[in-house]
Amino acid sequence: MKEQIIKEINQTIFDFISFTEETVLQEMLYYALGFRNDGTLLESGKRLRPLFCCLTCGVISGSHENALLYGAALEMLHNFTLIHDDIEDKSDTRHNRPTLWKQYGEALAINAGDLLFEIALSAAAASDTLVNKFGLRRMMSMTESLFLGQHRDISFENRIDITESEYLKMVEGKTAALLGCSFALGTVAGGADVKTTEAFQTAGQKIGIAFQIQDDYLGTWGEAGKLGKSISSDIMDKKNTLAVVYTASKDPEFKEKWQSYDGSAERVQEFSSAMEKAGAPEYLLEQSKKYMEEAKAILLPYRKEGEYQLILDDIIDSLTGRNK
Image 1: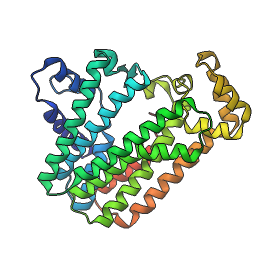
Image 2: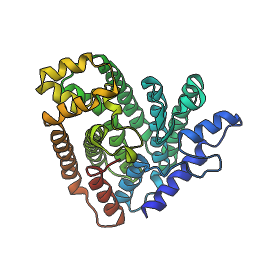
Image 3: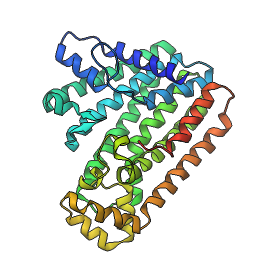
Image 4: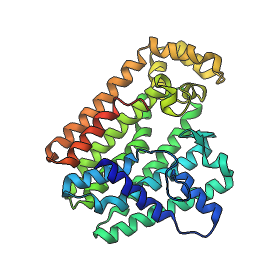
């Protein structure tokens, strides 16, 4: 059933972004969402956010169909942020292919991202009409958190005195906010009450934090071929991941070296080894597991027997053991 839901999600997204006669712009929208012009996929994406939305709807109501459009809206919004993030970070590749701005230029990519943002909001509004709910309002609130989180993320680039609480606040505004909204909109589409929706949103947020911490771990100690990027990129880009924040709090010498580091490939192993010596890999895995267990505890009272629950459980369990 999981593969069928993803297929329906992809079809919903493709149909919603297929509307403009501007050939290049249409091609850019397809490319950004991982499609060829004929609707086939450039790569087999996990579509994690819309999948969570559909599965939570299925757990609540026994069917996922009402969540498809909300899920599509979330995936389009997510990819809008990736388009702009790649420009802001000057990232050349994503998913083993050139980023949109590298393929078409910055100006066109910014414009395509802006259009994708509008399309995402239109999809959420259309879903509100379909299910007679107010999911768009929740999605807009989440979007504010995304922008604030991105502001913090960019602001951290030239700082070395970041605390773990500051780091987590940034993550709560980015990865966690989007996953939390995915869980919440699924319950909204499924007809849940406010208490249930808030519980699922909180659980989704905690899963988002666990997911980001795991991503930080993989960015230094993952498998390059499976990640679709060099595992040295986080260090060479001087990203203040939780591994860096944790090590800097334990090792003043590391903090000084990191501050003056010029991003050279020759010193990647030096910093990786320092983080290992400080116990950063173990700490990150421990924290990721902690947040995931907290999420499971929140969701426990709402468990229902059935295939939707089994698939949801399987995906949640796989996130802390992923290698990509």
